[in-house]
Image (tube, rainbow over all chains, first blue to last red; front, top):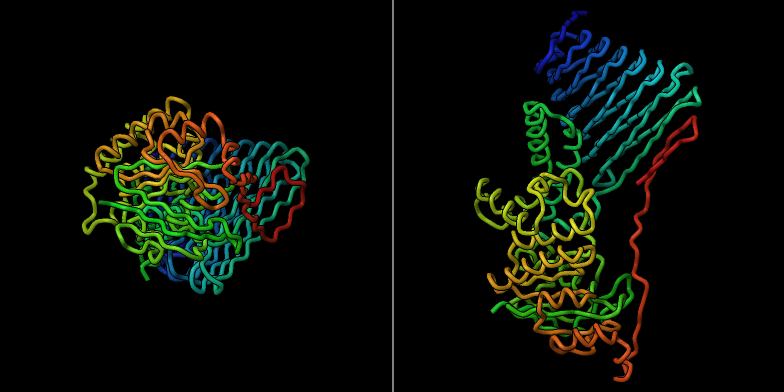
Length: 265
Length: 279
């Protein structure tokens, strides 16, 4: 197994993970470092990603997935008062299997996860927050659009261990679908071993709201134009709170390109 | 001359007849006030003209400059020059007003509208309704107050420059100052583009600011009385009871409330949730 190790400094970094060449990646964010990292997932194959945020580190980590087929195991270790903003932009046509475990190991650590997926193929996702210390916080928001023969299985999991009093874990998953050939199974799960916590989950799934469609069409947009605008808006939800312009532009143009491609068919 | 002509229009919702033969002509420069108690078909008339999928036209014609509006898709009606300022405008998450309006203008022209000129036009419209420029980058109606939503409808009307504008209770949710602002914009647009206007409102104060040239009372799916500005004053002072003397039965209904069904999914939960929301 070849290991690619990155020690991230302050500021913005753009990295490409070539899955054909390597299958293990390690990122270390040292204490007090504040970094924005855009990761391109290229090639196909299996990989292990391991990321550690040391005390008071802050990392905005964005993955742009262009791989035709990949299987990822990702582990994130969050130490005291560190904060990870994790965003996945899965706009590729390929298969994708991903198991993400976030370990909130020390007091005050925080994870904010946002994912946006255009599902046209088989996609199996597990996003799990493991709250292991007091005053840890987790919030997960998943936005999924299923298309054609897309099949999604998403496990959204929040685990609060016995010692993790005063922690919070929240999750929301929204699925937008277009026809009967698509399948989306969402499994929201909360496992809680402490009484003094806050936890919530919310899910919705359905087609584009006909009232929204009517509203947009009443201003002159065709059905396709209206759907394209709604889907772009829906997937762009992951861009909220992203301040870095390069990341915003890259993700936005990727969303627009992909949605235009899909909606113009 | 731009003319919207409604002939013997019958409209049903889920098989229930709401409009039972409406005849109305709105020409350019004219301001028509459409009044009547709630639940008698005012909003239905406007929505049916715009083409809301829930409303089924069972009989009659709607013509815009002689063209068959009912044969057109909703977007074609908009492009032909119809506009409906809605009573309950939709919230569209993730879509900014700027992106929405850019798409709405671009779909009307061969070449994309130059960005600079678009920004200037949009900003001017926003200023006119006395909102902050930043609103352009907010998601359409999301988190807007009732008044902000209505002003946003007016912004869209200014940009899209319709031949005939239909405004469904555009003044509700607006405070007195905001009503003045909206009325001023409306009057300017009528003056500039000779727009014809069909207004549904319950308030005389709005009709004082936008002087109707014509007024109608719609009861039980039919226009029972038509007149001019004086009819508005009469309704404001006396309500609708005097119509009984003319042998007209007054029907007042609770407004229909739209409740969206929640669609949940399978989940397991090992703790009593503090909040469990499915939308």
